[in-house]
Image 1 (cartoon, one colour):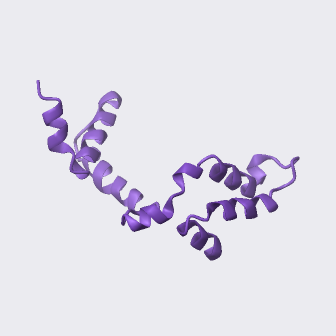
Image 2 (spheres, helix red, strand yellow):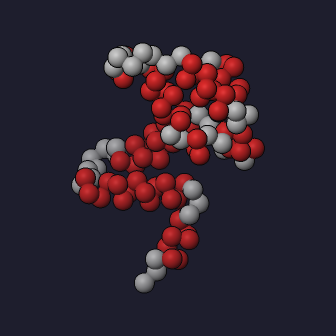
Length: 115
């Protein structure tokens, strides 16, 4: 696992995909029982999203931990205010506004959409 993570961080994803391909489960095995095949397929279809080296150089997060933390902080904190309730059709709009503000795009959004 550490070897593969190091390869990904150096944008050597083709090596990771090739090694996974060598370990694919038999064709008769269902996808539910074939984690290597699922991983291989997932990575093979997303090569354009595997620029981990560029993300690291840009000091961007490459793990899911920060995203999950932001989900709790940005979305749940606002949507779970005691006594508040939200309509399903407006909750997504509220979430987008919260993310926009966290990404420092708040002023630009309102300037663009000023009537």
